[in-house]
Length: 172
Image 1 (cartoon, rainbow, N blue to C red):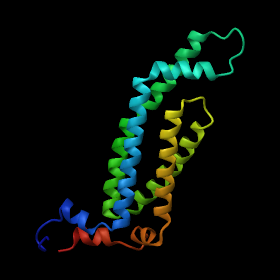
Image 2 (cartoon, helix red, strand yellow; image 1 turned 180 degrees about the horizontal axis):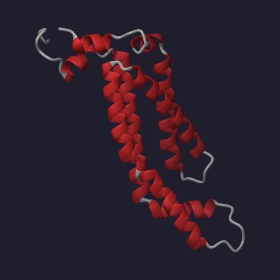
Image 3 (cartoon, rainbow, N blue to C red; image 1 turned 45 degrees about the vertical axis):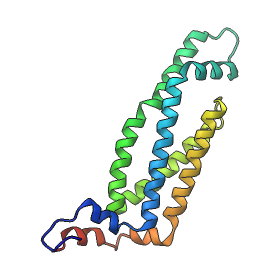
Image 4 (cartoon, rainbow, N blue to C red; image 1 turned 120 degrees about the horizontal axis):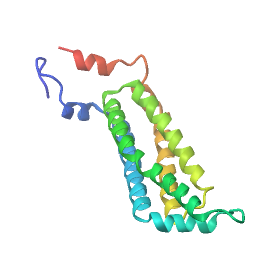
Protein backbone atom coordinates (compact mmCIF):
# COMPACT_ATOMS: atom_id res chain seq x y z
CA UNK A 1 0.00 0.00 0.00
CA UNK A 2 1.34 3.43 -0.81
CA UNK A 3 1.05 6.51 1.29
CA UNK A 4 -0.21 9.74 -0.24
CA UNK A 5 3.39 10.97 -0.62
CA UNK A 6 4.78 7.76 -2.12
CA UNK A 7 4.56 7.07 -5.86
CA UNK A 8 2.54 4.13 -7.08
CA UNK A 9 4.55 1.01 -7.92
CA UNK A 10 4.05 -1.75 -10.42
CA UNK A 11 2.80 -3.98 -7.60
CA UNK A 12 0.09 -1.42 -6.90
CA UNK A 13 -0.85 -1.44 -10.59
CA UNK A 14 -1.09 -5.26 -10.50
CA UNK A 15 -3.39 -5.12 -7.50
CA UNK A 16 -5.56 -2.44 -9.18
CA UNK A 17 -5.82 -4.32 -12.47
CA UNK A 18 -9.15 -6.17 -12.63
CA UNK A 19 -9.09 -9.96 -13.15
CA UNK A 20 -10.62 -9.77 -16.63
CA UNK A 21 -7.86 -7.40 -17.75
CA UNK A 22 -5.23 -9.73 -16.25
CA UNK A 23 -6.82 -12.57 -18.29
CA UNK A 24 -6.41 -10.45 -21.42
CA UNK A 25 -2.74 -9.95 -20.54
CA UNK A 26 -2.27 -13.70 -20.06
CA UNK A 27 -3.87 -14.35 -23.45
CA UNK A 28 -1.62 -11.77 -25.09
CA UNK A 29 1.42 -13.46 -23.55
CA UNK A 30 0.10 -16.84 -24.74
CA UNK A 31 -0.23 -15.45 -28.27
CA UNK A 32 3.31 -14.09 -28.05
CA UNK A 33 4.58 -17.48 -26.84
CA UNK A 34 2.83 -19.22 -29.74
CA UNK A 35 4.31 -16.71 -32.19
CA UNK A 36 7.77 -17.29 -30.75
CA UNK A 37 7.31 -21.06 -30.95
CA UNK A 38 6.14 -20.75 -34.55
CA UNK A 39 9.09 -18.54 -35.50
CA UNK A 40 11.54 -20.89 -33.82
CA UNK A 41 10.11 -23.96 -35.53
CA UNK A 42 10.09 -22.23 -38.92
CA UNK A 43 13.73 -21.31 -38.38
CA UNK A 44 14.80 -24.79 -37.22
CA UNK A 45 12.80 -26.71 -39.81
CA UNK A 46 13.17 -24.20 -42.62
CA UNK A 47 14.49 -26.68 -45.19
CA UNK A 48 11.76 -29.23 -44.40
CA UNK A 49 9.14 -26.50 -44.66
CA UNK A 50 10.49 -25.38 -48.03
CA UNK A 51 10.53 -28.98 -49.28
CA UNK A 52 6.93 -29.43 -48.14
CA UNK A 53 5.76 -26.22 -49.78
CA UNK A 54 7.52 -26.96 -53.07
CA UNK A 55 6.05 -30.46 -53.14
CA UNK A 56 2.52 -29.11 -52.60
CA UNK A 57 2.57 -26.14 -54.95
CA UNK A 58 1.06 -26.28 -58.40
CA UNK A 59 4.03 -24.87 -60.32
CA UNK A 60 3.93 -24.54 -64.10
CA UNK A 61 6.21 -26.76 -66.13
CA UNK A 62 9.67 -25.28 -66.58
CA UNK A 63 9.61 -23.28 -63.31
CA UNK A 64 13.07 -22.64 -61.91
CA UNK A 65 12.83 -24.55 -58.62
CA UNK A 66 15.97 -22.92 -57.22
CA UNK A 67 14.54 -19.44 -57.74
CA UNK A 68 11.17 -20.51 -56.31
CA UNK A 69 12.93 -22.00 -53.27
CA UNK A 70 14.88 -18.78 -52.64
CA UNK A 71 11.72 -16.69 -52.91
CA UNK A 72 10.02 -18.98 -50.42
CA UNK A 73 13.08 -18.85 -48.13
CA UNK A 74 12.83 -15.07 -47.89
CA UNK A 75 9.13 -15.33 -47.05
CA UNK A 76 10.01 -17.77 -44.24
CA UNK A 77 12.43 -15.21 -42.81
CA UNK A 78 9.75 -12.55 -43.05
CA UNK A 79 7.75 -14.60 -40.53
CA UNK A 80 10.66 -14.99 -38.12
CA UNK A 81 12.10 -11.48 -37.89
CA UNK A 82 8.96 -9.53 -36.91
CA UNK A 83 8.47 -11.62 -33.76
CA UNK A 84 11.03 -9.50 -31.86
CA UNK A 85 9.28 -6.28 -32.87
CA UNK A 86 5.90 -7.73 -31.98
CA UNK A 87 7.26 -8.73 -28.55
CA UNK A 88 8.22 -5.12 -27.83
CA UNK A 89 4.84 -3.88 -29.05
CA UNK A 90 3.04 -6.44 -26.89
CA UNK A 91 4.98 -5.35 -23.80
CA UNK A 92 4.02 -1.74 -24.52
CA UNK A 93 0.34 -2.66 -24.98
CA UNK A 94 0.34 -4.80 -21.82
CA UNK A 95 1.72 -1.85 -19.86
CA UNK A 96 -1.12 0.29 -21.22
CA UNK A 97 -3.67 -2.37 -20.33
CA UNK A 98 -2.45 -2.43 -16.76
CA UNK A 99 -2.86 1.34 -16.60
CA UNK A 100 -6.37 1.17 -18.06
CA UNK A 101 -5.50 3.14 -21.19
CA UNK A 102 -8.23 3.11 -23.83
CA UNK A 103 -5.62 3.22 -26.59
CA UNK A 104 -4.17 -0.10 -25.35
CA UNK A 105 -7.67 -1.61 -25.38
CA UNK A 106 -8.18 -0.55 -29.00
CA UNK A 107 -4.75 -1.94 -29.88
CA UNK A 108 -5.66 -5.33 -28.38
CA UNK A 109 -8.82 -5.46 -30.49
CA UNK A 110 -6.86 -4.47 -33.61
CA UNK A 111 -4.07 -6.98 -32.91
CA UNK A 112 -6.60 -9.75 -32.26
CA UNK A 113 -8.39 -9.12 -35.56
CA UNK A 114 -5.08 -9.07 -37.46
CA UNK A 115 -3.90 -12.30 -35.77
CA UNK A 116 -7.24 -13.96 -36.49
CA UNK A 117 -7.11 -12.98 -40.16
CA UNK A 118 -3.43 -13.89 -40.53
CA UNK A 119 -3.85 -17.24 -38.84
CA UNK A 120 -6.93 -17.97 -40.92
CA UNK A 121 -5.13 -17.16 -44.16
CA UNK A 122 -2.40 -19.69 -43.39
CA UNK A 123 -5.02 -22.44 -43.52
CA UNK A 124 -5.25 -21.86 -47.28
CA UNK A 125 -1.49 -22.10 -47.81
CA UNK A 126 0.55 -25.28 -48.31
CA UNK A 127 1.89 -25.72 -44.79
CA UNK A 128 2.53 -28.85 -42.73
CA UNK A 129 0.10 -29.91 -40.00
CA UNK A 130 2.23 -28.57 -37.11
CA UNK A 131 2.32 -25.08 -38.58
CA UNK A 132 -1.43 -25.18 -39.12
CA UNK A 133 -1.98 -26.41 -35.55
CA UNK A 134 -0.02 -23.51 -34.08
CA UNK A 135 -1.95 -21.06 -36.25
CA UNK A 136 -5.26 -22.59 -35.15
CA UNK A 137 -4.13 -22.15 -31.52
CA UNK A 138 -3.23 -18.52 -32.27
CA UNK A 139 -6.65 -18.00 -33.84
CA UNK A 140 -8.36 -19.47 -30.77
CA UNK A 141 -6.37 -17.13 -28.51
CA UNK A 142 -7.38 -14.19 -30.72
CA UNK A 143 -11.05 -15.22 -30.50
CA UNK A 144 -10.75 -15.45 -26.71
CA UNK A 145 -9.17 -11.99 -26.60
CA UNK A 146 -11.96 -10.55 -28.72
CA UNK A 147 -14.52 -12.25 -26.49
CA UNK A 148 -12.94 -10.77 -23.36
CA UNK A 149 -12.63 -7.36 -24.98
CA UNK A 150 -16.35 -7.38 -25.80
CA UNK A 151 -17.38 -7.99 -22.18
CA UNK A 152 -19.18 -5.14 -20.45
CA UNK A 153 -16.72 -5.06 -17.52
CA UNK A 154 -13.75 -4.72 -19.86
CA UNK A 155 -15.38 -2.04 -21.98
CA UNK A 156 -16.28 -0.19 -18.78
CA UNK A 157 -12.71 -0.39 -17.48
CA UNK A 158 -11.42 1.16 -20.70
CA UNK A 159 -14.32 3.58 -21.31
CA UNK A 160 -13.31 7.04 -22.55
CA UNK A 161 -15.12 8.62 -19.61
CA UNK A 162 -13.37 6.36 -17.10
CA UNK A 163 -10.27 8.32 -16.14
CA UNK A 164 -9.30 6.15 -13.14
CA UNK A 165 -5.75 5.59 -14.36
CA UNK A 166 -5.08 9.33 -14.67
CA UNK A 167 -6.64 10.11 -11.30
CA UNK A 168 -4.78 7.27 -9.55
CA UNK A 169 -1.47 8.24 -11.09
CA UNK A 170 -1.61 11.88 -10.01
CA UNK A 171 -3.56 11.70 -6.78
CA UNK A 172 -1.91 12.99 -3.66
